[in-house]
Image (cartoon, rainbow, N blue to C red; front, side, top):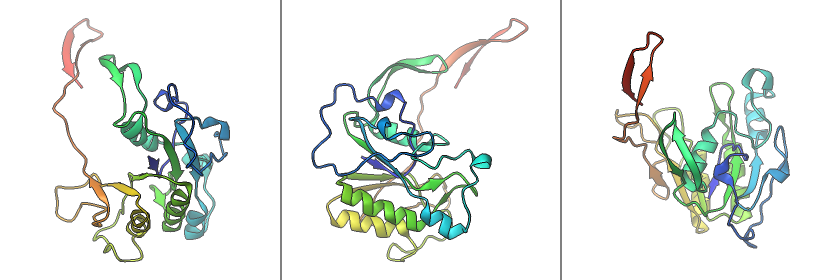
Length: 233
């Protein structure tokens, strides 16, 4: 399972406890950078790389790390990559709760899957993912021997480009991956319900919509005046 965002490798969701050796078919590696050592990878997080040359060529500037808090490394700056990758393939983590309620064991959809992270998006200028970096990451992931590619990113502008338009890097890159037998899963975006707001609609991509749930997290809170109320998250 491969993601195109950053990751926080210390998360318990990426523990390799109980996993065997890294498959011999894996050709990727773990790339060092700011606040990220190659030794952060293990038998669960088997690869992590970052791509920024396309962004710098596109914008003509270096990353302003002091302003954005970004890391020139695979490290996740805003939690998005860590969140999505652990949702899909996080290991079992016991005694997890939300604000002290809903206590239980957290796990991803495929907890024994291996993970590789290819960071192509940068927390500057409202969030930038350069097409050249996306395409480079696709190429490297294909060469590294991934089985599934998952991208929780999409175009920000409407109307969307046609899937055969060279400006749609996700559609073009994913076509090359699918042609080599690699499944590509992409986010449909968080817009709507207006028309034409679904992203990543190329027919060779598995497009996954956001969802809601009817679960509530009731708990009691006591105010400074000693009055107690039951509220729900």
